[in-house]
Each structure stands twice: as C-alpha cells, then as structure tokens.
Image 1: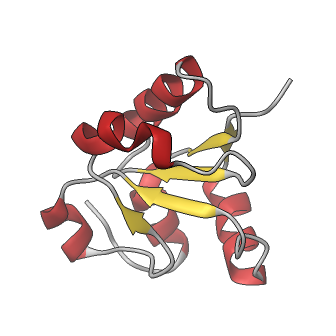
Image 2 (image 1 turned 90 degrees about the horizontal axis):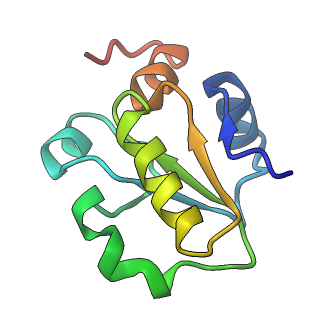
Length: 107
C-alpha cells in the first residue's frame, strides 16, 4: 500500500537533496498565507480551486500537498485519492513544521 503522508523532516531532507525535482509540490493555503512564507519550488493552488484543477495533475510523478498545519492538505489528499490520483502525499504538520525546521517561526 502507498504511504500517503511524509514527515516534515523527511520532506525537508528530500527537498534539500534535490530528490523532489521531478515531483510537484502544491501549496493549498490562501494567498495571504503563502505571501507570509512559502517554499520556492511549490505551486500555489488554493484548496477551493483543487476540484477545477483535478484533470491537470500529473499521474506519473508524486504530488506533495502542503497547507499551514497539515489539516487542509490531508483533506485535499483524501479528495485526490477519492478521485483516482494515487501518487499524492500529505506533508504532516504543514508549512509550520517545515518552516520550523528551517528556523522560521510560523504561527
């Protein structure tokens, strides 16, 4: 069975090592949240826009989903799984956890 979550530590390690270069990182937060702090390789698709983007997600690469604390991203992962995408991964703890690993206090 596919694992549909990743710890912030594992995600950050993979991001720093370049392992995610061929994968898609989707930030599902609102624009104001993204403007506060974001990861440069991520694509911004607010959570409420996910349904209209459904047919545009790649099926041959992993898709890492991030939000502020991991709650919205988990809901998006469940939605995508329900709609036939299998290579989706929730970043546990969200941007707050990843930012914390990078020394940025994110509330």
